[in-house]
Length: 294
Image 1 (tube, rainbow, N blue to C red):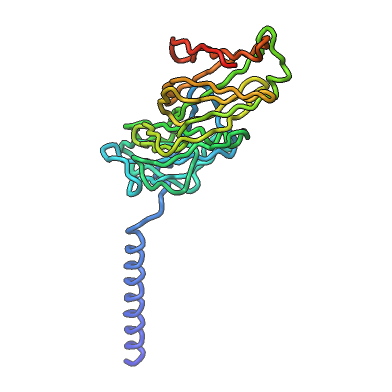
Image 2: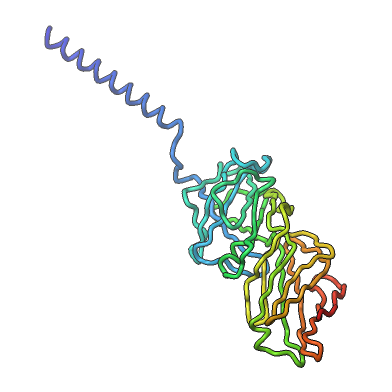
């Protein structure tokens, strides 16, 4: 009888332990890890106008359910970091679609930052010193979105467009110009605001802050480029050109539009009275800003 009772207690203990194990298993399954049938999110980002990203570039990606608005946090994916390896974009951590049927909206921006305090007034500053290629490219804010995307194992294609404006200054030696002096010229952009707020929902950009100077990137011997915040400047001293001991100020009115490139061509000619500088027309309109400074 004693032996039978011992076995009975053992059997009871085994049943209790088995029940506890099953209960523990049920609790763990309430928040399961992504299972094989979960669909990982893959993306393919293209720059507008045929530009290409470079290995090591990082972008930020927000994903919302199709019917939801974009918020700084609480979206399906908040500011997911993707890195370009030269061929594909790789997520910093595994990211998955909500399910196999819920459509989603994708928003991406470049360059990536770990802190996004606002999605309707995202702060961005162009560099005031863009003389290095690195600082010039870091001032090129890009943004793109695609909506109503059906879950797919294939990469989601997003085109990222330039949201800043690009100002190009070409300095040409005229018929009597001295090539050496042109190549050693110093160019400064003046009277431009360098701070902006970007709406990540629609890509609109609003300039803010005070006007400042920008030192552009020397793209070639005669060409200078700078990324500038979209804004309208009226009767403003826009370009300061220094050649030798002479300084020339180019004063004009121009609407620097988001996503557009504006070109200012300056012809420099030697004359009996010094150097004549003619301002050519901007590339984006039909108005002639021609003039001469001495």
